[in-house]
Length: 413
Image 1 (spheres, rainbow, N blue to C red):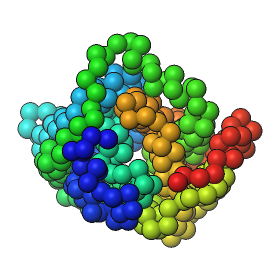
Image 2: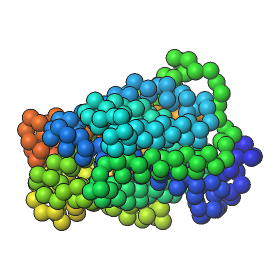
Image 3: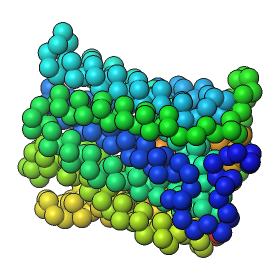
Image 4: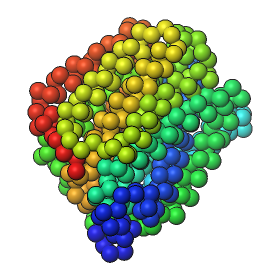
């Protein structure tokens, strides 16, 4: 680590992550990035369902966000490793602010119509931006804090994501009552705030400037394939959440099953984040140190069971509780996986490895939304969610047999 690196000034015995120079601004920038994306997602989902009334179109929004991430994964990882990481994320957030601004213009009738093609096209742009900002944010953190504080820092970074995921969907749902233009406008403003926070961070002196080639772009993929623990951890999340995710169908549950309207949709979207935020606060003070692999498999199984309960529930209180348990269990898995991947990956490869990891996360979320919308169109929303939760339990059993080294993985110290 270079002597003028921000983390170099911290003693290894330092116990406060907040005392690391720049960490508070990084945390706030992550809140802004996640909050803007969550508000945008709530507004787009509600507006798309209002226009088309199709669960399949809700899934299609997730698909068009995922496809650019898949197409750009190798390029994005190499860009994150070659260029200044904070600048890469800042440009991505600025472009998302532009997309939100266009949706404001359409919602207000300023020369554009908020139709299905415009929403899908701008969703694809947001997906392309996410291909860069997600691995960029992940790769910045180990360069910002000492390794001795990395597990706590990852838990706190996860709390930033979840804090935004609690507030932003609820706020977005409230603003929908005034019209989608209000939600899109606030999204634009929050994205621009995030850009200013990122540009105030110190430059990461360890950034590489090597020429981008096809061989260098594939280094991250080769590294993951050569390390079964890393491959097992990120692929477990991919298939478990791909099958078990019910987020895309929340507008259906809010309007047609629980009958709680747009404000209720915002509350449902916030419930997983409430559970995750509480869990992240606990993990920041009591980080996982032993039996990490076994705990990861257990929490993914709880995620699947909570999905089944949510799918069958007709009581709003039980549905919200199931979503909170779902979010808390997923957060434990996220922190274990994130810490494991960061500790196992050299800094020179973190952008490329995290790009693949973020693709897996995107596949589990955006592609999972398409899977949920597709199965709901065929079988109905409730059977789609229940079958997805049962599928997650099947993945847990299969992955324990396929990746025994991950099940035995012990210490995150």
